[in-house]
Amino acid sequence: MKFKDRTLNQLADMICGNFDQTQGFFIYRSSHYISRFFSDADTDYQHDGSTRGKWVSETLGKILNEPQTSPNLPPDSFCRVIQELMDQGNCLNEDAERPGALALLNSTISREGFEAFYSEDKRCYLKHIGTNAIALASPNPHRPFSVAEVKKREQLTGYLEKCSEDDFINDVLLPLFRQLGFHRITAAGHKDKALEYGKDIWMKFALPTQHMLYFGLQVKKGKLDSAGVSRTAAANIAEIHNQALMMLGSEVFDPEIGKKVLVDHAFIVSAGEITKAGRNWLGGQLDVSKRSQIMFLDREDILNLFVVTNLPLPDAALPKFDLNEDDLPF
Image (tube, rainbow, N blue to C red; front, side, top):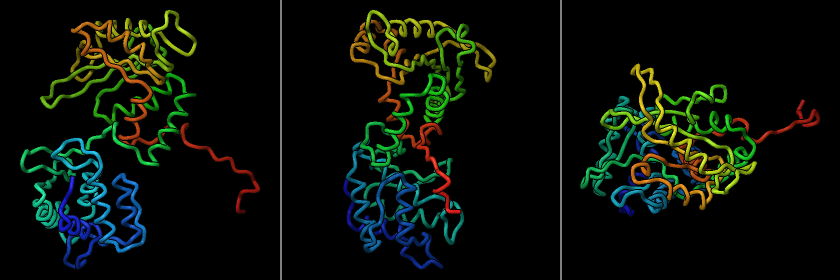
């Protein structure tokens, strides 16, 4: 996506705060705070000390050249930049609704066919005027990763190699699905496995119509394959398939409505790899009625989703530093 140079220059002035601070609506940012601004917007751009406005304008052009999730909407990174710029905590010379800043922003981006507005969550969003499509800056697990995100992904990979199944559930899956918008996420644990009918986790998701869909998760620590005999480090996909079918036929009690409900969809989740042979076998076994009910996520899917949703790493995945007494400054 390409914006006019005039638009980029005006947006750069807003980010830099190149206005009279007694009358303007955007705070002044020095070189250090410009770098912090782009870091807070989850990008890797750091100001190089050159002219602030020119550098920011060129950086916005680079961000607009990133992959788009829709032909009519800007990249997710650009949406995050606008949300950071219009953060209500950065209001200046006006109230938190920022009517002056919003009017100035809209007079600039309207020539590109966009309109900015505040939603009920007090965050600023972009709408394409021609189609009314709204850019939600949703996490895209297939986008290119930054250097910091690649490092985070490697650290999480090392953690998945050594963690237990319960740690995988509690430290990775539960925070991830909460971040993705699921509700009432409940882990069965290993104490009452005999009573869970194959469910390690159950949760629900609210549709825009306020209808609820219920999900059950069958979680495995190791690799899933289609071998005839399960190995120590792998599980047979046929066993997991049978457990998923049991899951779909069982009920869960939802305390929010006070009654039992059937599981609508089953997730097969592996902290390791689901082999190609395993996926092919599972696809062949699922008939038309079950194909939309049983889904699966393997390590690559979990790693990508965990990184793009910007979740903190589990404590056990963080690097440890051992200090000797000789290293102390006192």
